[in-house]
Amino acid sequence: MEHISRWARFKEWASKITVAEAGMLLLTLAIAGSSIAYTKYAKRQWKVMGNQLREMQKSNEMERRRAEDQEEAVVRLHTYGLAVGDYVEHVNAVNSGKFKARNVEGHVDVSLNDASNIAHKIRDLGNVDISTTELRGTDGSVVQETNLSLTANDWQQLADTNLVIIETGHIRYENGFGRIIDEPYCEGWWFFRTPSDKNNPVQGRGSDCGQIPVNVAGVKKNPPH
Image (cartoon, rainbow, N blue to C red; front, side, top):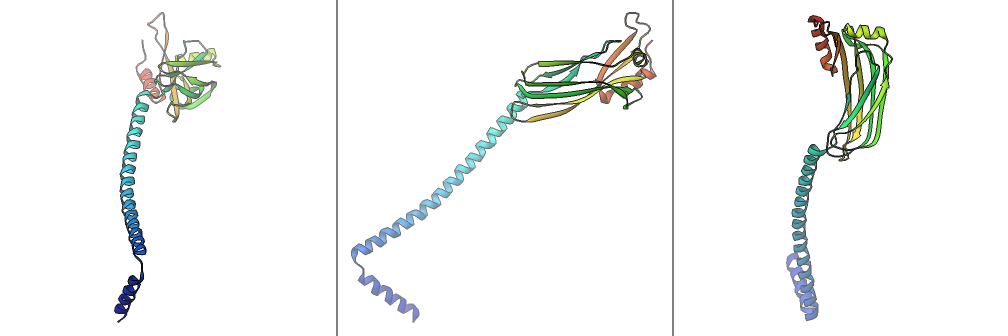
């Protein structure tokens, strides 16, 4: 009965509205239907555009990373090594990448260490600081030097491969793509006597710190004649 009464009330209401009111109702319903349809269409379009934008961003990021891998600034620390009896060490920061390195900061501590245990420091010899706002790419470089507190007795111990010179530190810079690089540095120099070479009776070699114990052990085991 409730259903019938509602239908009756609807028919009564419908019989009383004017043609203009009916037209306005139909127009309102049409507009509402169109709005719903457009909203669904717009959502689908935004979803498609969002997916396309994400794909473009992903592609751009991959291109940026590829360019960074191929062209970024790459700064490394190097030392020239000492001639036997010398005491001036030169530390060189070299950019082998294509982009300029920015805000370059480097520090190196030089010490005299036990050749049998390079972790055992005998004493500090000096240090070097490197700083520049820009370092051009493709072999751009900057050099600093320091006087080392080496004595004649130190050189005797170095020549006998009882001591080694160890250089540790780090290099920090911006690689041209907004990324900060901060890398450790450790290099060392060991010396040995070569009595058969009258022009160079004492010679030196340099390498990464990790290789020094093996090289020193080789000299101790098989001393040059």
